[in-house]
Length: 183
Image (tube, rainbow, N blue to C red; front, side):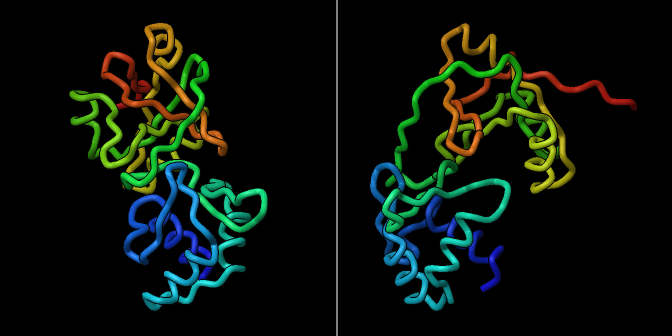
């Protein structure tokens, strides 16, 4: 399994489908590395402990965290599984945050705002460049500005995951703006 394939597989299992390999996550998303590897092998995936450690250490996104004793792993955010309900401390966000999306989703976002979908939170970026990268995963990228300072002042909670991703329950349309583009 390539490092990229291993990382995608681990993300899928830890965020969305631990049951697909018979894995149990605790409420904070932790699973034993040996259990993850054994479950992967049981369903025909060629995953090893070094593959798991490499996935944690590689990539700019820093999707995973190892426990202090090196025996457990968890995804930092992005969970859609009901097994996990990570707790994050509420923190004051920067005045402006960004959300990268594909242009095909703009009509729904303009009408409904940003919703978490199957995930537990809406994911936001602290900088526009990161938002562009996120949006490009789904098609032609479009970056929305989020008036996080005003949202926070009106009582909306924000959290910051360990890898710098900003999280909130939703972003109503009135807090979104779009860059002016040349026609």
